[in-house]
Length: 159
Image 1: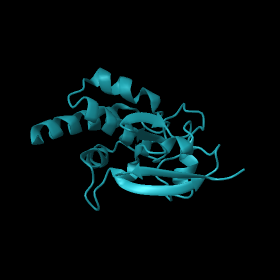
Image 2: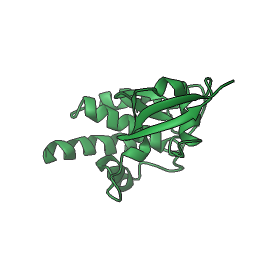
Image 3: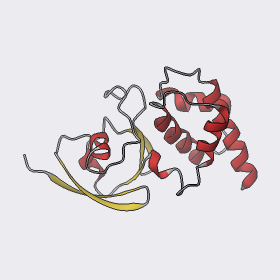
Image 4: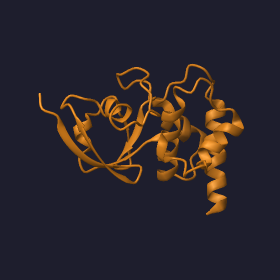
């Protein structure tokens, strides 16, 4: 089967890669693109560890074909920090200890950022609902939720 040439934008940078027609976006990210932050937790779209944004919409990269990235804008965990400057969500996750093994953390951070871009003043219920697709086996979700709520408050104050 012939490989497909894909031209896309990832984390604000133009990218081109070759992929098999049946290859998932997660496999393309972790393989030819060398972006290993997104994790495969389940391969069935149930855990959220592979969450990315596609034209601003939160998606599981394990369920998306890489060829679907053609002409689209993708955001991954690698795009959160700006050089050595952590995104406010990343900083709050560290301060709150809202991570343990790290498998779910990239997907949770991408999902939380997508939430705050859509709703800069979420309630606790809205945060919990938005992050319901991201499973964590190591933490209670409370520290994650608190970190997201505190980040939202800090970002509103800074605006």
